[in-house]
Length: 242
Image 1 (tube, helix red, strand yellow):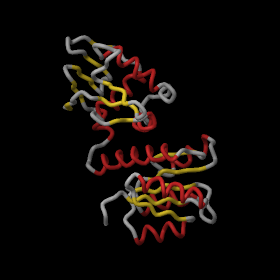
Image 2: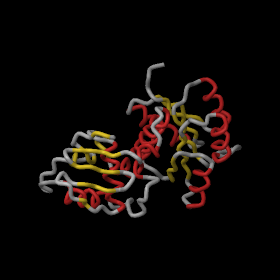
Image 3: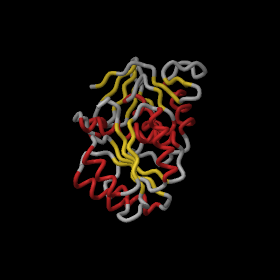
Image 4: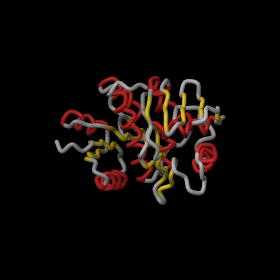
């Protein structure tokens, strides 16, 4: 084993398999790409797989049935479902079958990469015994500021309560949980998923701007939430948790 995360791609489209294989390999992943459920099972028998990218529309046994099988046989194995069917009902069924995330076709390779990294981070947190409930019950401190996750309250260094919208709270919680890491828009969306972020999807830059107005001394030269041009944003303040 070379220590690289091993991704199993199950898709009957050879072009997609080759594209995903080539792209993920560039980002230090091992990739096994197969065309159907039978080959998927063989790969799982012979290799240690860290995540499955699973197409719904497959010849023979479809992806939903395979997802159900995976959840029974490999309950901790992360699954991202991919399909050309973009309807909400298909997305809901896939997630109810136990998929960790869902990505409609056509998708960009970079978006898939961001989804893979986000799902693997969440999976690693569960494996380490860090539950979502524990994260939501924490209190975070950064340069005098206090974010109380259970009460969804932000307190300034001078003790003043600073009101946050639902989207602003979701954004700030993601940042304090991942300090000193560059997060692009796709990653921010993934990490905020599951929270009350209905209006979050198309307003990343707006939410950052609003947060900066509330926590930065100089919005034109932010010291806490910094822009990394061409990449995303980084929360640069040290964070402690209680």
